Length: 596
Ligand code: AMP
Image 1 (cartoon, rainbow, N blue to C red):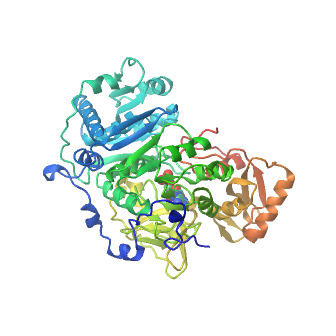
Image 2: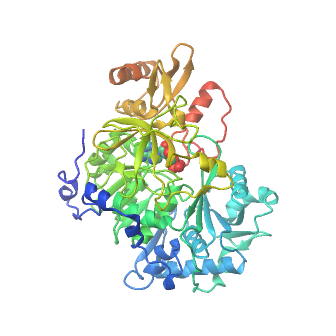
Image 3: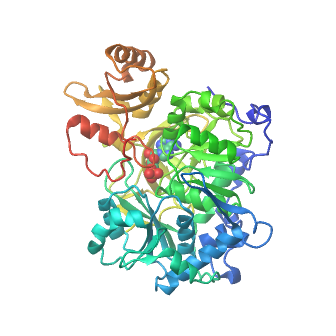
């Protein structure tokens, strides 16, 4: 089933303003698009001194018509609002750059943040970029060990944190971090010995700062990723990435000047930086930030009261909203909302359709990774949505599917050659042709791993996908998550999505459990919606339902789980479900979100 684009017009129906989409004709724009032209949308530093993300996001708007526009509107947990106009954000970020300079923090030095989503986080992020230092934002919920590992791996020189987080998490590991020269404490009164009060140094800093020459290839951002598997790796991004942040937000999020944009991701995850800080500001939008965690009523209230026009969220949040049906959305005035998008995990077809019922708008799924730095595949405002599909490659992005070898990944020859899967319907490892501006430029201190990520002129994503005859891409699985059962290769997402069509199922996580006969059998862990009992009857009902829907791919076993383990970016951690099932060590769980 398709949810139609231009012909089906929910916007007009809901009495919303009809604005022409930025990407009005996919084929035409895809054919003509050149990154060089996208680069021309950037101003560059005055005097031809290069390209700096913070200049494109803030300073270029800080004079002229946007100066008085709200750049950043932060809601704290108690609904207190702090607003910074573009002019004010320019001043504050200049101050922070001066603070760094006065501390002797230089180009390429790493500045880490460990903060809730408070205004100081955003000022620190952009001020760091102005100083040509490198920003590495960490999830504030990390425990001391993951923080220590990342500060070490990333050569952290500065850490900006709160008094509470310092006391609970940093004080105990400080001695193990000799390279960490400065700790700045936000909020609270006073700073413990060995730290500096953020407010004090900011008060003493000038609000003028000339951004030093910045090369487009200068390192700007360091994002740690462990995905749902493996140990953390530091993905390096450069200032030129801003070209892709800007262009992809225009096309895949339909972002326009004047929008109120809410990205629900924390900057500790790449989405919360590329789109939760940089892209909306480059567009002159108002960036809305909420410091609180997910809450059904709160979120609808924010959408309504803040007049959010473009909303970027994640499947896990949408599934949580879906648990409560469309009731809480009714009676809300969501007329300002124009575009809804989702990323991070496969978006179940159910969720796309549910968006139409709840908001009068379908949810646009898009796909990318920490390594790609920006959206690579998406569903666009002017295009029909095929629920369950990630959409089509961004203009400027060449995607392919590579034939796979016995280990499930692309088959790479001794000469590092690969074979592109051709034909109208293809399946294989998703690969991208290097050359887009936000491509990662390395894994910090791990050149060999970086080199292994490329073969035959492609970047290998580690995801398995399918492409239909019309060029839409469909996510199958992370290569590590594929289940091999009785000769079938099964993507857990397909099974999870089918189960979610049952009214009792709020969320599902599917793994392969080793089996002497079948190789693996499909086992599903299911969270039920309120009002359903985790009993034998429900289990039998779900097994039968799965069989009707999926035949040989159906789960043979179903277990109930009130809280599936998620990463902090919202992905179901299938690896952990499997480790727990098999009684194996849980491995690196630093990105695990604690159950509510
Ligand atoms: P991260 O680097 O933490 O953002 O994780 C990237 C991975 O998340 C991708 O390689 C995919 O496995 C998964 N992912 C992100 N977006 C999507 C999507 N729209 N559909 C399916 N999987 C996704």
